[in-house]
Each structure stands twice: as structure tokens, then as C-alpha cells.
Image (cartoon, rainbow, N blue to C red; front, top):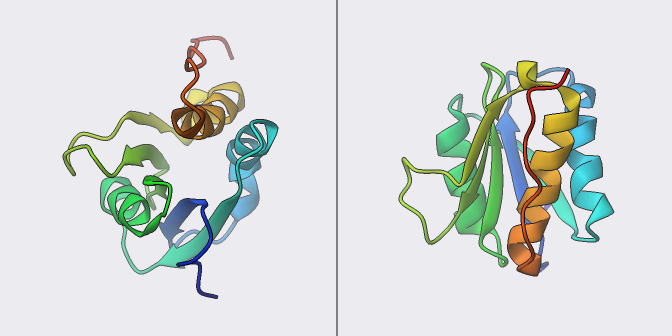
Length: 120
């Protein structure tokens, strides 16, 4: 499926990830902010590589990369490849995963980011 013409947040995840459902909270965070997204597996392992490529390919300039190690980044095409805007791990809790998705959308909307917490 080609997504070049649609303005979406691109989410590229390692093709080694078998169960995408553990990332549902991330998607729900984006949906709550009303921004469309597009998910696609890629033959890469690094969340930074995936996120940077996703941002480059997005008409909105925002991408999310999900690495095989559970690391997740939000990248913005105007940032250096090695310096994503946000980074966390799936182990940081579902509440933070949802906020990460919301913050990716909020970057596009130009509104303040939600704060991450240590609560479980």
C-alpha cells in the first residue's frame, strides 16, 4: 500500500515484530488527537532508523519508529537523525505509550505536549 499522497503520521516498525497489538495505546493516542496515521513493517531493526525514515516519507514530516527491541521514537524531519523528539520503551507503560502517540499528533497540531509520568 502506498501512502505518499496522504498526509499521515507514518509508523514504521521492525518486520521482526509479530504482535502489533501491544502498540494499540500508541495508535489510540494519535486517534484521540484526530490525526491520521499509516503503519508499515520495514526490514530495519533500529527505532531511530525507522522513525527517521518514517518522518522523511511523511507529508506531515512526523514519523514513529518501533524497533525490534521495544524502543519507540517520535521523529521530526527537521531534526538530526540521531536526535528524535521523544524516545521511550514499551516497558515504560501503556499510559506513556498513549501519550507518545498523542504527542506525535500534537506536534502537527502545534499544541503543548502531554507530560510523561513514572506511574504504572
